[in-house]
Image (cartoon, rainbow, N blue to C red; front, side, top):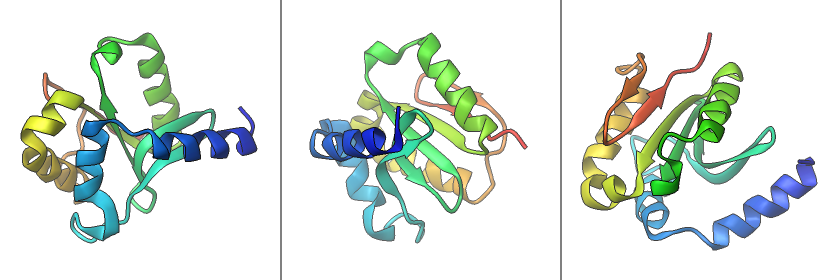
Length: 130
């Protein structure tokens, strides 16, 4: 995907976010979460991240049920990890029901308190490759 195509696709996605993405964006925008700046629908290589904290190289994906055990998503996460991004995947239902807990977990990653891979029903975290 060309940079121009990725940018125009990201702009379109910003206008079409789902309820879970909208709910998380309320907590992330305007440096509201620990003073960290997040952007949404951010192109990284051939992929577009739902949310990214560029300074801390963290990507957050809000996933619907179609992402469960997705080979495409595993390849995408590995690509971003090779570029130095940590990737958090949070199910939409978890964002909607436990947004505060997820924000606490995001802050733990940003502060370096969570450095290992995590796979639970509520989230998956793949740390960057260093």
